[in-house]
Length: 302
Image 1: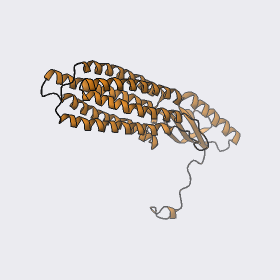
Image 2: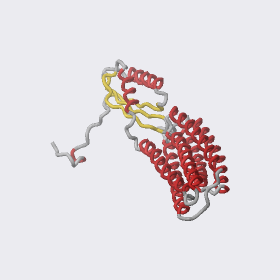
Image 3: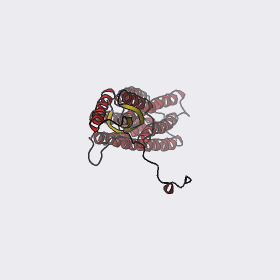
Image 4: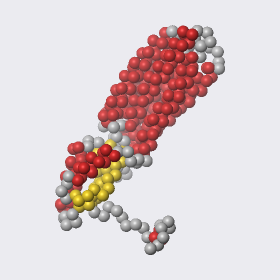
């Protein structure tokens, strides 16, 4: 999955490069800091998308001796870097907006509205495309890239309304587009949090895949030799999942029969859940003995 996803990110890099050039030029010629702020964000998006590209390439590598669970966490790490770029661009935009608000300047040129409308249409289209692909692949990194494009669309829309106000209202409203840029910075800050939270949950192995866990348990219980599912732990590694499954089975089963059952269950799970990368199955004795009382000072000896 990660190699195709990485190629999709390159499409976003190309789009951001073209739009950054158009918005920056239009902002300078049209005296609109809201457009210049948009161009700044698109420029930072280029670098964050390139980091995301290399992160997805790394995440797609198969498990090896040093990384038995695979390299999927590289996707979450690059998502953190993406968030850092978003926060940096939002901070720059907010600072420059305040400076322009307190500094007298001309009303933006009317042609900047056409540029902004075109940017909104293109960026919203890119958001929908990446959002659909990220949802299909279960990729938090592609979702982050999608929201990068949505934040661009929102900032451009805010700038459009700000410039419209300054043009319609005339003298005394010259800073309306700067206020719009300030609102855009707040939107970017919020989007950064929305992207950061799921990536942090993945790194911390947060239990948030209850539906998947129930489907795995139901599949395990279909095995005649399984008496009970004692434990089912699911962790997300990039866009894939790793499962630790603990089963209670008939103790009279031979080792060969257990191996056959495990492989049959793994095959069933792989067929039903395409995003399962590894399934570790342990039978009987999943719960270790508690430590001696001397190692657990919070408990009284009995």
